[in-house]
Length: 178
Image: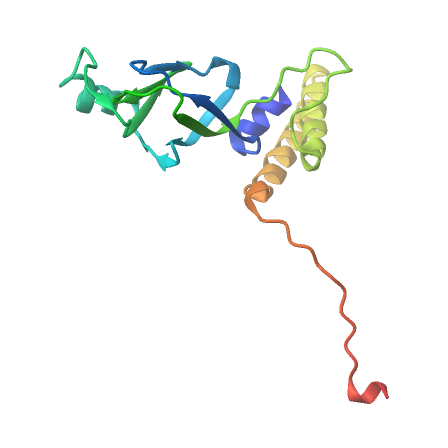
């Protein structure tokens, strides 16, 4: 539950997946990817325009309800676990690459690892403590922990997008050091 709460506020599980196109197939099942949100989709290296499903229906399906147009896809939309491309790919084995933010794996036993990066573990503990205090009916302590959780999580927003830089110590010799 803590992991779901964290990824709903901070998109930290960055992932991508590639699948081949299938000629004359416009819908692709993405249920196995555990997608929270899609960042972008590339078809043979070219970024496709993403549309809400409502816009997709209004702009494309209304004029081509049988989806008879085929060629190189230009747009995509997602409904549930189905990814729709338009026009329908006319070739097989072209690359469809999906860049997305994932959902964490379910933790069922104490042997299961968390999906989050290590720097988020203190947030998991804060969330768990807040829920424990709530179960003990210590609502003041629970509110305190959940507020700390929220504030610390806001402070971590964007941490995963910052490129890591190596730093090296530098020794500067000044004239007065002689």
